[in-house]
Structure formats: structure tokens, C-alpha cells
Amino acid sequence: MCRLLAVLAVSVAAQAGAQNLLSNPSFEKTGEGKLANWNWSGGIARATCEIDTQVKRSGTAAILLKNPTGRTPHVYGTLTQTVRVRPSKRYTLSCYVRTEAGGAAWIGGGPKWTHRFGFPTKTDGWRRVVGSFSTGSGEKQFTLRIVVESKTDGLWIDDVMLEEG
Image (tube, rainbow, N blue to C red; front, side):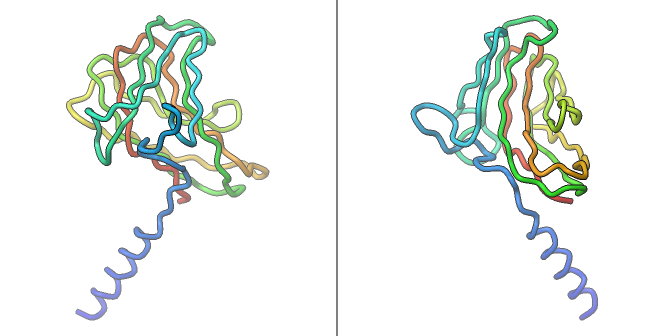
């Protein structure tokens, strides 16, 4: 019995030690009507990023992405945040999404946007999207991207997490 408790304690401690490298991962912090710690570009796609306090998975807000433009090369909206990472390490990236009419969209990043984990185009409630990747031998920072590449009537995102392991 004591051995089982010790194993459980180690397991819980390991899970509790997972540190999210992102700032404002649930989109609650704002300043001057903009998301704190995130950068948005709607580009020539005229895509939008709104803070939604009505539809959210946790906390007080989620983001709502919309893109009125059909899929065309180099035409997209993107939300980014750059964080420090360690070279040659494994990382896990996850978030929760909700949509009834999503388009081509993904979360990922890295050099040349190598790591891409696609979002579903329709969900029943919130769905977790998760993917793992390894940093390169000289990689010390990672730019996380959330991208909408085609017509998207509404894509909600909440609880984004980037952690080592």
C-alpha cells in the first residue's frame, strides 16, 4: 500500500510540474482592447480575432477567429507568441477548439512553420488538439502560431499550452 501511494505521489508531482511556457494562454488578459502577450495579423485575408467572454471553455474568455477569404496562397490570419525553448528537447503543444463552420486552420510554428497540427472543421462542443515536436540543436526560441487559412465563420480557441516533454 505504501509503495502504491509513493508511485501515485510521484505521478501527481510530475503532472503538477508541467509548466506552460505561454503567457496569457486562456486569453483573459487584455490591454487597450487587445490581447496581452499575443500578436494578431489579419493580413490581406481581412481575418479577425475577437475576445469572446460568452463562449469560453474556462476562465473568463476565449478567442474567436473569423476569415471571410477563401483559401489562397499567402492569404491568412495569424495569432503569434514567441517563447524561449531549449535546444534538442521534446515539447507538447495543445489547445481546445470549438467550431460549427471552420475552415483550414492549425496551431504550430517553428522554423519555416514546420510543425502544424490541424483543427477540425466541425466539433460538438470543445475538442482538444494536441501535437508534439522536437526543437533543433540550435533552436532557443519558438514562435507559436494559430493560423486561419480559408473561409472560417467562427473558430473559438481556449486554454493553449506549450510544455516541455
